[in-house]
Length: 95
Image 1 (cartoon, rainbow, N blue to C red):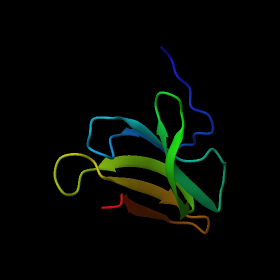
Image 2 (cartoon, helix red, strand yellow):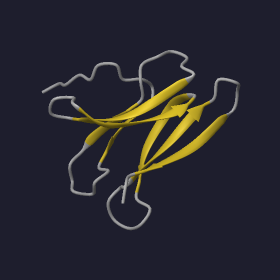
Image 3 (spheres, one colour):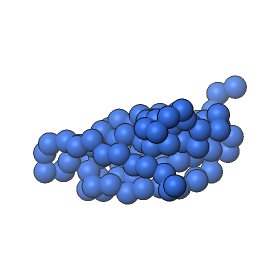
Image 4 (cartoon, rainbow, N blue to C red):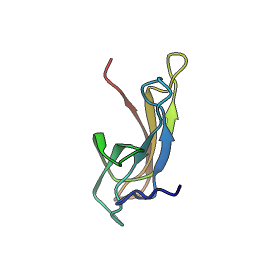
């Protein structure tokens, strides 16, 4: 069945950040030109949030990254900055 997620912006990806096979939606906010954006982890079954990290600028891309072996434990964010330019930001989970 179709599912919808409210308030999801341009940056979004299905990710397994815990490495346990459970997919979550990593999604930016839906603001058009924010000075700060946040990537949120949302459960797929009910859309409940499981955490968020705020970054300066607007998140346009989200990808999962497995840095230390199998299982993606980080998110790579492509961020557009309000003053111009862009950054790649790596967000790692707590160890």
